[in-house]
Amino acid sequence: MNIHKQIEDLFDLETLRYFEKKQTGGMANQKGSRYEDFFSIMKLAELFFLLMNNRVERDIEIRAQAEAFVDDLVISDKLHSNQHHFQLKNTDNVNWGQGNKTISDDFSKQKQLNDKLGIEVTRTILVCSNQTRVESLNQKLPNAIHEFAKVLFFPEAETLNQLILQHPVFKQTIENICFSHDSDKLQALAIVILGHWSDRKTTVYSAKELLSELQETFPNYLAVTSEMADLLPEVKKVFANIKNFSYFIENGYLSWKYAGGLDSGTIPYPVNSEKFSSFQRAVIAKHPRQFSELEGILL
Amino acid sequence: MSRQFSEDVSDVGKQYLDVLANDKTRVSDYANALYELGRELGNVLCHKIGHRDENICVACTVEDADFLAKGVIESLNALYSQVYLACFWNQRQQLLFAQQTLSIAPIIRKYREPDVDNARILVIVKSVISGACVVKTNLTYLIQEMNPEVIFVVSPVIHSQAIGKLEQEFPKAISEKFQYVYFAEDSEKLEDGNLVPGIGGSVYQRLGFKDQEDKNRFTPDLVKTRREQLVSEV
Image 1: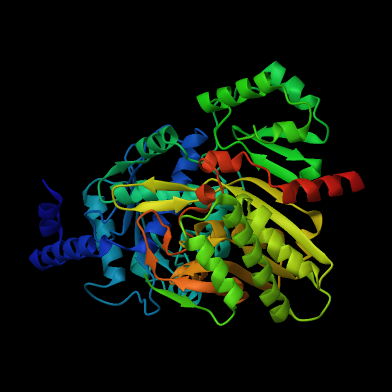
Image 2: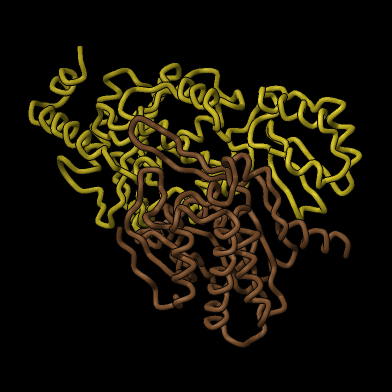
């Protein structure tokens, strides 16, 4: 039985019409929905962190504009029969409402529908860009949805860079999966995720597959969590003999410093990559003896 | 082609802008024009900053260091003794997705003098500001390391939408600190991002670099000289 039939059986024809209209409107609004995209990037980064650190063995699906009453973003863990629905509102006049076709009613119907579909754990989350409104909405959370609903704050931003600078939670979430905490690498990673997500967001998608795709593209700025190759002994020897030069490998990338950080940098590809092998061969071949001979190779 | 000059440009400045725009200009003359424009921009900055003791950080990219930024620093040094340098090597990339093309310019190397962190005034210098991606990236890095009260965004030529694009990359508390010093504003942009007339194409190529990698392997004399002096003082 498809979902439309389930809705008609569970509620009535009028509710089904409302549901269908919601889907059509949702798809039309999807193009250019910056607020929803930025929030989705944060949720994807959270899922990537779990996958990269083997905290989840199962796969999780994520989709924008799903077939649902609460439909802006849906994250499904099918193995554990767990589904999170997000409704995003970046306007100030957000209310739970009373009666049909309100946020409160959508949340309630979503829970009823998920129960009917056999989903054991349902969470419905209202995401709002107005901090004061979030507090008020949390205080006025209707009893009927109290057990499975909550309200979250997520600020509106014009660009990903602005978001990283003004929302510490977003920044921390990207930091958790990035090879560096430097703002330029965080920006780059968030932009790369945005590009991949925009191409796929309205189809049911596996977070694991999306992460694999990202890991296979260059550049990706993701932390490398697999076992790392060390530097070749000859390269270590060359580096050790260069005065005022130091280096470290973190999250799979080599960073270096000269004169206590007066000059510093990061080789822009991971140490287990073919390009890094070429870099090591160049160091051995040129055998620099001082930093001025090394600096042109550090790329 | 549509160009508007700012009220800060002199007749000399306009002549050097023409030298940049002319595709027949030799590399050495092109570099000299950038240096002279740097001096002119530095003079405008001195006028705006005023006669008081200031700690100033001049931030630039590797390709702009030896000419444009050097000119700016020399003019500032005539009035201010505490001018510090930050130089960035960016790896600019266009990422092609089905829905859109996105630009990133992560920093792969940076030179940062210790007193940069204490500067009250930040001057970010760039030979041309078109999409503002590189300026945004370097400025974002710097404002997390230092807390300037005033941020001058300085360039001979900017695109007519560059200021709006740059400001939307920052929270208002930061973009309110921006002041702009430029000589010409161009509204025509080619698909490759170069402005018309702009600075006569890509600054890398006009300065004789083969490509971005060639540019990023280079260490400017300005950095070498200042670094050597600082290392010898330790």
